[in-house]
Length: 278
Image (cartoon, rainbow, N blue to C red; front, top):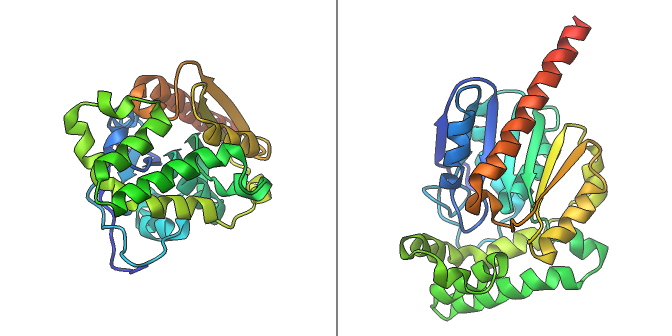
């Protein structure tokens, strides 16, 4: 990864740092509501990942890994100060987990909404049905990109995550940036399916983790949740009835409330523990 690449970052508020990482086919804009909610007591930074929003384009003719996403975001983590909290959704949740593994001493808490580390399903049982749903959707979307039809790619991808007909019901202004982002779909899938980190590595993450899921989410997201929540040592699990994988986008108030309460609890607990040790 080139060292001169710099992510675009939204920033608001003052206080301890919180870094919010968005889903693929999205951008940092998805966190505007959460940023407003947290700004009175936290310094919130929301970067665009590779090829998203106003960050650098996905590198051509190069296999990108989650480690490359971490390299791009390292200046953001540094700006957040130590220790900082992480919030991640979908692809951003996978990146957040990898950041917590890379710098456990710097991360005080992690709030996740269905991180998509599909490699864990592959490690458990290659080619399993739960993983095949997203594998085939991503492959179909990538084929549509090769055929020069980004709208068809976006329809296949969005309908997998949000249900049949979701793309056609989406307002036209929202479609264009999503269709444009589909150019990276093969790279997203490759990075998530081939990440070599074993499941047991996450048992070393001792910081508090909030793991949020939607009751209506696809089997791939539920399968990753089953595996990770079984090994994370300090995990609180919240399932939202009626929400799907895109809950942070479709029902931001519901998800943002849970994130804000979790972060406030972690902060209060940390303050209490410090006072006991003083």
